[in-house]
Amino acid sequence: MKAEWESAGELPASDAAGWAAREGQRARTRSRSSARPTGATARSNRFLARVLGVLAAIGMFISVALVVPVTSLSSLAGPGGVLTAIGRVTAMSGTYLLLVTLLLIARIPAVERAIGQDRLVKLHRQLGPAIIGLISVHVVAVVLGYAAQVSAGPWHELVILATTFPGMMLAVAGLGLLFLAAFTSYRYVRRHMKYETWWAVHLYTYLAVALSIPHQVLTGVPFMGHPLAMAWWLSLWFATAGAVIVYRWGLPIARSFQHKVTVHSVEEEAPGVVSVTMTGRDLHKLEASGGQFLHWRFMKRGMWWQAHPYSLSAVPTTNRMRITVKDLGDHSNSLAAIKPGTRVAIEGPYGAFTHHARHTDQVVLVAAGVGVTPVRALLEDLPRHVDVVAILRGASRRDLVLRDELAHLVGERGGQLHELIGPRSHARLDEQGLAELVPDIAARDLYVCGPSGFMQGVIAAARNLGVRGERIHHEDFAF
Image (tube, rainbow, N blue to C red; front, side, top):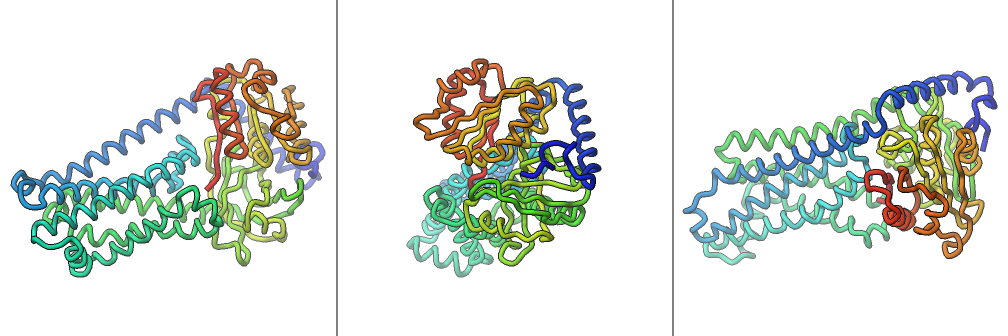
């Protein structure tokens, strides 16, 4: 790798200003870190996460409670009354959770910092089955309830509802799109799909929500003649739509125009691994921390319509930033052929895999394969007084991506670097291996990045060695 990412003193004169600005920024960051007690940012983020959770619970309570004014004892006692009430409750709760899942992935900066995008995506996935279940119960309960009221068969009543009630055909189409998104979210299905296909299918979730609104407003009994309920739900829909428009589209477009990022060079780091260096304007104003990632949209034929998440492999300077990517699919494979001068649209930075999350001044950084990219940037961004132990894992020496750079950064601060090379059966990073390499691991923060199975094994071993859960930090970008 070129020396420009190793030491400021070896840089060409043309890059000296960028690196000087970077060093000044890092000095200011360290000053702020020293002034603030260790772990204060993490505690603040946990508090904000709890507040958001409480607000979400209150919102769910209000949404369901709005069904009460249209539910009387006499209506419950009538034919199909209980089923109809169940249908209304599940409709409200399912729709509310659907809006919550959209807000979870709306890339709202404060929420991203407090929780981390990988955890937001995980929660988004976990809520998916509940939403599908609630909406399915809504459909079945309402059809059976209405059928009981008019003494008709359920299939006949389903056809009547779908073809004669205002906005119902749009709702049916939206339900189909929602089921399609849910089906493609199952792990087995995702494994057999290209990321590009999965991403395109999930865009239809927004359309599914939009198509469901007319039937709720036009036929939903809790809305008809109840302005408070109507105002509540309209505010939820508009707030969700506003957040998506502003943070998923508006802010990325504004930042892309502001920073004018273009590809500077593409270099091979290892077989199937390339570093893409980009230039831009005032990149330090992104305030990206080491360990974070952005969504990148390379403006060339066949690639411009999709954005992919890649970690920064170096902290941005005033005019340069870099990602290091392994060939894992069509998009990452195409990066090797990107031409200098290609425009790049950016979205981010995102992620809580940063030094701000640590609780101590002692850390252990563990990386396998291309998982070293956020670890390398994180190491560069750590305050100088933090004691570091770094562990690199690879099947062969060539799998230790960015090894020389990481060794330089560790040596510069007087830390320890361990390299585990060979088959997993011989170079194990289990409980015993971690204890031998890092005897005081229980007193440290652990940062780990790599394949999911590798991370799960390291995290399990660390927990058994006494590392508390809040001191374990990882990012999982698997879709």
